[in-house]
Length: 284
Length: 280
Image (cartoon, rainbow over all chains, first blue to last red; front, side, top):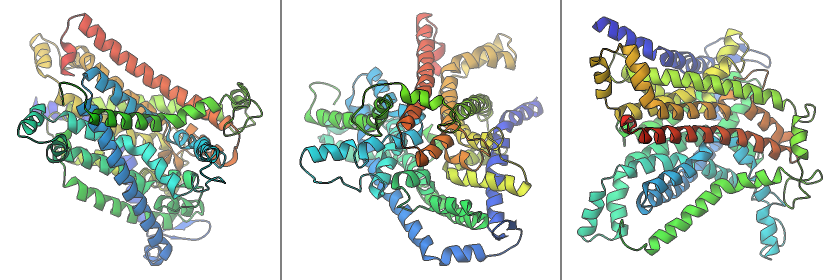
């Protein structure tokens, strides 16, 4: 009986395990192997060279790009956390009917299921030279000529990140908040805490796991992003992902692979640090 | 906080929430409006008349590449990814209710699959196919790449669902003589149906909109997000917005259908006085 049961169990997880083996583990190993390969303008040549890493790590461009990417990640993290927490706090603690909570929560999550590329394109009529923002400001007499930095700049990149990824903060933080026992809040109030004190000393610490999960999502996505930077900066800003994509388009696969390994290690390091704050399995 | 009059904090936070929703939806609504630009209209306001010109333009093949083909590929791929995601996540969710050898490893693989940047998965699969001398294609390599993104979501949702699932329903079924297959087919699946629809929604929409994971895995024929991305660099007419409106329309339709069917299932349960759905 037990033998049969364990056989069934393995059959049940087989599709999942197979996908992760073939499309996660093997490809990552391929990246690691190829990162040591040699290459010329037309092909990659199996070898064991450290040259790709040397060239990568000795180039000031690499360090600048990593610094810029980390900067994007930090700014986006701070903004999405602030906005995400505020939004979740309002829905979880200030909206009284649970139907209304569900509706507002869904309202915040629906964009997650629509296309990111389209959502980026949709900023063009707002931010372009002749977009809504510039025409409005000019009509109000606040500026004489269109602001050039609105579209195709670091500003628009961060704006798009916040627009696309704040939901990744809202959902886990809201989830944490909904699990907080409401009698704790009552106890805090009875003990004389103001609303602000309750927020800082009771709610915030209990939301830590949600904040950690949201942060992991936002930081890893921004660290690996290239399409947002490419589209929203018009090629003016750099990111590690974009650097890799450029190497790929020049057929410098081993160089891209070496960069990918470095990025992967960095991201895993950041995530490991954040995971110490939370046991994900407990959060489900 | 729960009783009495609304304080100023409520109104302030409420105003911020409305701003946030405006920020989320405003841009998309704008391109929705602008996609009905007249034939001489541009990428920004004002509207030069109202027409369906740009939608017609969209379906003329020579104008904008292969929109119809890429839409078709993305829809097929989305449905395939959805089906596999629902079945694989559900069956893995069943297995994960008890510990088995390797369960921790598999769990961490799922988490890793979520946090490894998409472009690395894309790059890795692209390189793998290159090293093996295979041609990447949307129905093979991109299919696998999408699953590495949708399956962890499906699995985590199934974990949450099974944590709240009352196993006494299964015991009752077994006591009445049901086989394990019958228990799953007639008890577990019907109770969990709303959640399975949710997993399906994730599977379809995440695949349908996936860009980074398709980039080096789609091969010769583009999926829709790749096609749209290609257009942004060389199309400067509102046809871009028409494309956005159609794409978003498909997503919204799928989301609405899922939400409606979940609501309908819930309602039906309450009406029939069954407590079956309470656990899920």
